[in-house]
Image (cartoon, rainbow, N blue to C red):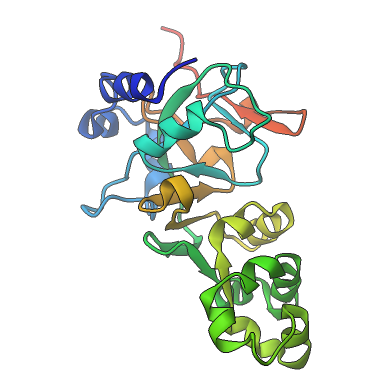
Length: 249
């Protein structure tokens, strides 16, 4: 099994990881994709974000979730060697560097791990947002906001929103909860949202996390080419994607 340290060393010393050279090799299609992206470094240029993969298939992207997460190189190394799902075995640990096209994120707050539901309400409307809140009520109750402002007067999120539906604008929860909710992500994508930029949790607590809703928003740093939807295979509740192959000489 690959160690996190060995994985980090291989990624750090990869000849294609230097950002200036990576930007220079971008194809025209990739440059068009990245125009206007919010996934940028403080200097305004696209940030290199990393994803840890562990599946034995060797696919460039592999996920069971409705959105695809990227973050720091260090966090990606941890996820590659220590999957979140304890039932998953590490078959081929690898860290994948990418540029991301995120032009209309549901939230863009690199340091905040919480998603304010007012943002969701503005995108989806009150009724749909209340449904999301009720599905994840335990995460709303597990916030200081609930304890300080609602716990003494309301027995549940359901009770609060039945009596005061407008209070949906005052609630928040961990962003990852909504971004791991397939129904919520599909609804957000349907109204034009394409991802999220938020503070992390756990291993990524001090990092920024980037979520994309479609693999077509991902560009391989190593090839400068987009990941194509045509290369996604559906099966076993996983989605796979490979970088676009370089044209034949």
